[in-house]
Amino acid sequence: MYKNDTFTFQLTTMLSVNSISKSFDNFKAVDAINLSLTPGMFYGLLGPNGAGKTTTIHMISAIMPPDSGNITVAGIDVYSNTQQVKKHMGVVSQEIALYDELSALDNLLFWGSLYGIKGADAKKQASHLLDWVGLSDRKNQAVKTYSGGMKRRVNIACALMHNPSLIIMDEPTVGIDPQSRNKIYELLAELHQNGKTILYTTHYMEEAEKMCDKIGVIDKGKIITEGSLNELKSNHPLEDTVVITYTGTSEGVINGYTTNHDPALNSITIQLNDAKLHLSDIINKCNAANISIHNIDVRSTGLEAIFLHLTGRQLRD
Image 1 (cartoon, rainbow, N blue to C red):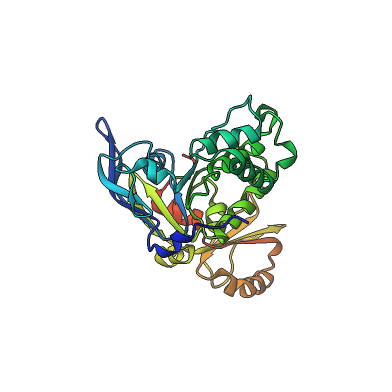
Image 2: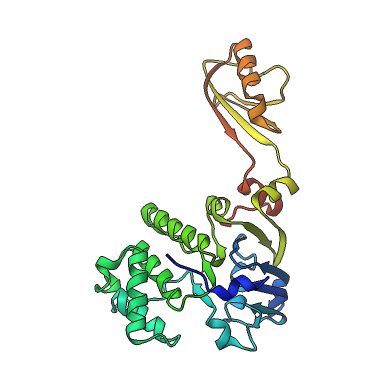
């Protein structure tokens, strides 16, 4: 439904960030960051609060120039040709950028006018987008009557009025209900399928795991690792965790495995590589040790474990 500009398929790089840095007084918020997004890539940028994520997004979005380094979008320097670059870039900020007193339709028409989209073309594009985000039946109602999730969807539609090739989204699903979040996931999947390049920040690990082709982890102003989820797992191997809860009593000893026993919680924890390959053996040895299993939870190494291992911090510090 939402096609990419044909010219982007002739590019090898949609977004190029070359050694950008930014300081505030004596604090270096971003330190020589490099990013490269090919056309059609869905890139997730993760980092705890204060890591430099938002500053990086602001520099890429032409809001705040870097102290050093350069940024290009579709081969165009962001700060030498800002107005030209903005035609190729749509920004969905974390803060809702809408006029509450206006209807959703009028909000889209306003934002479209900033890109020179007016008249019948603007109305056609706005109606198409509001139908796409599932709000055509409410398009003439004031935005102040909308739920938070509905406002988020209108916010996304506004950023797409000029059909940009690069879409920058800063936590677009924060603080909304599950139904609206799932709808936004559907919209993102369609944008990705149709070739849009997306730079995405989120505090939800499962979003990055599910949607992103490539993930970068930023901490203390630097990109400390990046790659696909499989590449991150390969480059940062961690053990899986098996948590067994049992009924009755137990010594917490399972022959052949190193266990961590918590009798207060009736739980036994085992850490090992490829836990699923050992699961049947663990069950057999629990039976042999007269451990009455209530539940077994296998926690495979995921993005959250890798993130904690690299930064030592929860994502929402």
